[in-house]
Length: 222
Image (cartoon, rainbow, N blue to C red):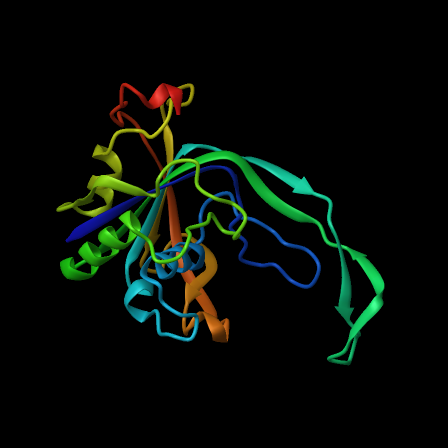
């Protein structure tokens, strides 16, 4: 097995999975649909194109720095009238937006197709379209591409061995979420079709904790 690692770090991130109508939520960690969307942007893959190859990769997230959940007050006009496809240009609604501030994640994608992971690694280094952390306006503070981010290791081993991206938290334990086969919490963020069709299904995620993760000398300033 091979694993591709990504760094998702920025002032603001938002990884919604259950947003409906006028409220936009965020999970406390990157969603799989969001990460696959980021990979599509790097590849220049259109929303109407299949994503089966990317969705089949097994994903893990190591939380190197927990984000602070925050709420933004926004309003929207021109919302659709109930029972009609026409917008009401005279109506304004409150549309709260939730996001994470100052979070830092190491994301791993495991697969047996080395050629695919090599293609993704090159694309992240020189993306076709701008990369964003869940929303188009949320740009990464550090490159998503890691020069040494393509490893000949399992997902679990890669998450344990790769140095921390920022100063370790008190206690030194890092939260780790691993995609599992039917065990753990259910996340409704597994892409089932091209993004233009907006079809997502469930996947299982197990949460554990890592200790003894190497500490990079320059991570304290991140």
